[in-house]
Length: 344
Image 1 (cartoon, rainbow, N blue to C red):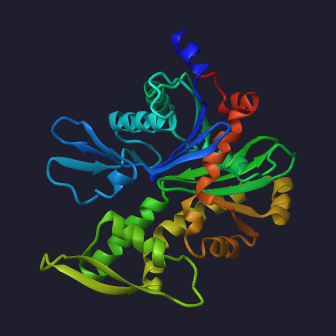
Image 2 (cartoon, rainbow, N blue to C red; image 1 turned 90 degrees about the vertical axis):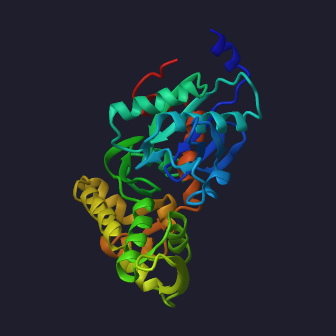
Image 3 (spheres, one colour; image 1 turned 30 degrees about the vertical axis):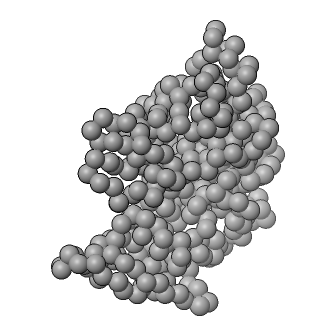
């Protein structure tokens, strides 16, 4: 009863609880928070020292008594306690320090997560102060977020490449006709770059450096003008700091593994697409969302492999959380998509 009364003064929120970043949408205000999903803790007492951007700056640079970690892996909760602390921190921030905020939360989750993983997310959200929790699958949230008219009796296809998971979905009449999700996305791209540097040059680089390489010169399709970048790391033989130069062609080679797995996922969805909807895709094409949409040439590669036009969302990083925000304005549709009544 207290939660319901306090909820009258709370602002309902949508959350894209991503492996790499967490975004929060407040009903009536839009996106109010965009922070890395990173938490720094004191290893002795497990107290939270920093959250978000401040914690991310600590990755790989903490003393022995501190640890900066990412509590979500492959799109799901890897550390329940730390995830809960991170969510509480973000909810408190967006509610500007209100002590009693019990909002309705709409949280986007990867397609295909297990019932146990869904329960974990809901438990963390309730413990972070949620009055009601709705879980929606990321592909449908992304499709709604980019403005696809999925209520129509016509086929739409979206590819959402996030930090921990990639999802491909064919949608029609307000629901998912067929979807396929894999736990291969931005994180695996970073890991592949780090593995390539170690294999090709005997250079050990950290998580942040791998991500920086991907952002600055990463590509999955030949560029008109290839790029180079200086990389700093530790020589595996001498254990001394070392600097070398790499090219975008080399990064493209490093990204072959995860890229092929994403393309295989796309092909499977197209193979399972009903003929009537397949004809719609020829005209409408594919929409690309998520951070992976920003990797150079991703749209060109998918277009070449599928023979379909590929459109990158206007703001691919915000697509999912924008979708959760639109769900807040249509609770009836939200309840149908969530497929279950929330636990209060």
